[in-house]
Each structure stands twice: as C-alpha cells, then as structure tokens.
Image 1 (tube, rainbow, N blue to C red):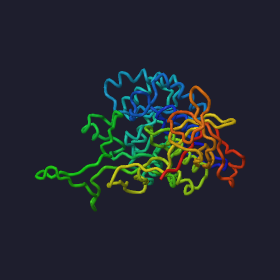
Image 2 (cartoon, rainbow, N blue to C red):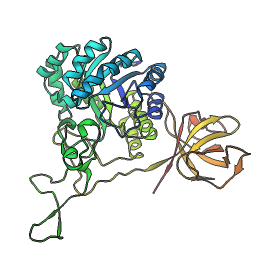
Image 3 (cartoon, rainbow, N blue to C red):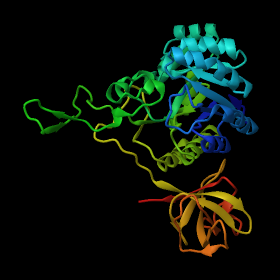
Image 4 (tube, rainbow, N blue to C red):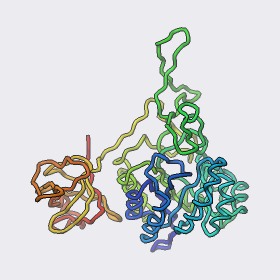
Length: 418
C-alpha cells in the first residue's frame, strides 16, 4: 500500500505479466507489483511465461520501476513436482523475487525451507474464505492471503475484522472469472485430458453445448436458462473499477488484475484505467476505457451477491485495435505496426499517467530493414516499422498545445473499430 499526497492510503495495484512485453507495459503504466510464472508450476501454461534464467532480468525490470515481483507456484503439486521445486525456489530467491503465490501446503513448506527470505502469499486456489483459515495460514508463515473468488464485500470485511491485522488481504478486481470454486475445476481434465489445475485448461466452460434426446439422434436442443438457474457455465468478466472504495474499506490491501494470457496492449489499458481511479480520477469517466479492450460482458462477480453468466453465447467484444507502439521519437515518430492503419487516420494515444489524446497520421512511410523510407498509403505489415508525423487532433487540451502531440517510446496507438 502507498500513501497519496492528500494522505489517502492507496492499495497496491497488482498486474499480470504473461511475458516480458506485458511486464514492461504493466510497470510503465502504473502497476505497483506484477505477478508471473516460470516455465513450470504456474496455472497459465499457454502464456509466454519466463524461463528460470530469465527471471533475474524480469525482477530487475520490475524493481527498476519501483514495482514488486511475485512468482506463481500455485499449480496442483504431485510428487515429481516437489522433487523439482527446491531448485526453482532457490533460484527464484537468488533472483530477488519478492513473494511466491502458493496454494499447496507441500510447496508452502518447501518455500519456507529453501527460500526463507521470500514472502508467501496464499493463492485463491486455496479457497480461503474465513478468518480461521486465514489465521492458520498466517501462523504457518503467510504474509498475505488472496481471497476466495466467491467472497462478497461483506464476507471480506468480516474476515478482515477477525484475521490477524498484519496479514494482508488481496482480491481480484478485473478479468476472467472461472465457473469452478476459486478456479479448482476438473472439467477440462475429464473432457480433454488437459488439467486446469496444472495450468493447461482448455476452457470447456466456454464451449457451446446442446442436448441430444436419446431416441432422436441428430436432433439438438439448446441448453437454456430458467428460473432455477443456468445450464451453461460461461461466466462474465469481473469489473470492479467503480467499487474500489468498497473493497478498500472492507480491508483489501492489494487489487489484482487477472490476465496472464493477455497481450501487452490489454495489460497497459487495464492498468492505466485502474491507476487513474486509484490516483483520484472519477470512475465514471474512466470506465469507457475498459470497453476498448477485448472482454466478455462485465459484472461485479460475487462481491454483491450471486455472480452472473452469459448463457446465450461466449464471445469477446472490443471497441479498439492496437494499431502500433511508439519506438522512437525525433524528427519523425517511428512505430511498430500491429494492426492496419492508413494515412490520415485518427489514432488514440495511450500513455502512462495522462488522459487519452488523439493524433492524425501524416506523411506515412514504411521503413524496410534495408533501404530508404518508402511513402505508403497504408501500414499493413504486422511487426514491421513505419514512420509518420503525428498531428494533434484535440487542440483544446493541454497535452496537445504543441504543434505535434507529445509521444514517447512505449506509448500505444489504438484505432476505433465498428
């Protein structure tokens, strides 16, 4: 937690880092801490993650930005895992990792023995939802508990009142929700052989299902919702941007964003929005930012009652595409292209710690690896470099008071779609 200029206590903003690009985006756009996994023991094996020998550089990157680095070791542990785990723990401790996120008591015990200087955070996978469980974990050595995903704001406040005061509480505030109890699901393993508890979830809860009557093969009947509940498993995404004060008042000291399978553009956008609100911005003004990135319909999860689902379909919606990332700023702005944009297009600029501004693309040129800049009408070569002159669109804002809008390396350029 930090303290603002007006003496407000501000909870930690904890962001996902599925790879190096996401880590850099998280800390640049305002995360106080990041969490990531190595190539083993994490629950997002489809993410890029980090090789063990890459962790020192990842931790150094976070620390250089003033952020903490937590490593997830919360997969279901079998005997072979526990044989390999001590060497990982020792290497991670040597890399300067600030905390491990664990759920298995065996992993917890080994972490105390092989990395005694590293803080221990109890994963939501452990399903801690009462003060007695929290107290026991604290007595075993935990410095933080991640609240079970099924807890309400009222439940959290009650646990905070009865748990040890020095024990920190962390809660998810944004991202995908799992239909199982705190993510402990067996459906993927049963249907595909890919265990979600080992990090290989195939997300069968998002699949489209229908009934087939035994005597009528080939005739499909959709599974629908009635007054007793739903027969599909597609959970809506969590969005607590407008309710951070409630969670802080209940005793949460760390706000966690889900999304280690997400790209850097997603991480930067979501961190930017939550950072703005934590720093005093009006949530109602910032909320549209969270519509720009790919998401399912939003809800507040279990925090104010029963969680909601989207029984009619699974699908993402978004209002913007990541057009480019700024690489160099000088006489001309050099960018790496991610999605098609054209001469004369209006692009929105996402930059750390300031409102979104707009620029227009002027004098667009392709920068081949060899050769001279080539004027083009369209940037359509993904991952290749282009240059242009950014013309400020909003001349009424302080940010656009100069002839060219202020851009910096690492700024993200996005384009409205639809």
